[in-house]
View 1 (cartoon, rainbow, N blue to C red):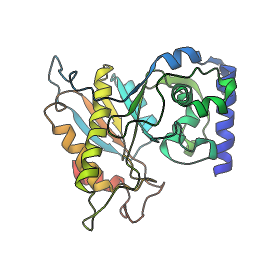
View 2: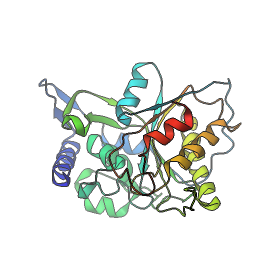
View 3: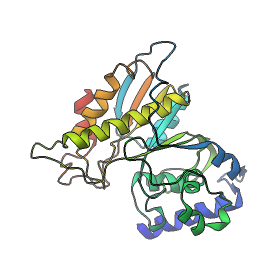
Length: 288
């Protein structure tokens, strides 16, 4: 599987360099100019505290779904929402291990879209690795801040379908703004299966960062996932509780119309930190 993922990523790279592709129906599909993609991205390192002042109070409906996150976000768009989607990012390296065929969520998103054109500008090493992508180095660079680090990518065009359907090119690509935030890697977990108070507090700030960035850019809904519950070995039951806590906080309770958790078990599930998988603990926490 890693070999085929690398092939798909290399194909995606070729299409991004070309700037267009031919859809299955034979239509030429133009991709956004790389300069526009880069300009629509911003790396945050400080908390956006003062902005949480919605003009009207909303009551968010929370759903937990066994669903591909991209398809979940596309579904919200089709329903008339304006969602931002969480990318389970790597703190140090934009795109994570996409160059090596990793099956994690960030790498999946990078194979299906132009997300790397947004993220790679924040890494000198990535720009040097791909000098023909037309990227210009940003003044802001990875690694992201541990508590408040996040990247908003306003132009992310998804032009491939899910891996489960063969990563086929889309006849009609679509844009989903993405918020990239990294979970703690290997947090301190006690015998009760919960993270230490220190790691829980850091994670709460990460979740608040996701929400603040989405609100700052005018989104009315979020597509989230099991933050760090795969390769980074965060306990899903505790992560679900922390998300629930932030959703109920005064500063966030009335900000969004919909919050969907799209969680697919399979990659790094059934392990010591998530013996039940990741979906079930979130369903239990939110009564879904």
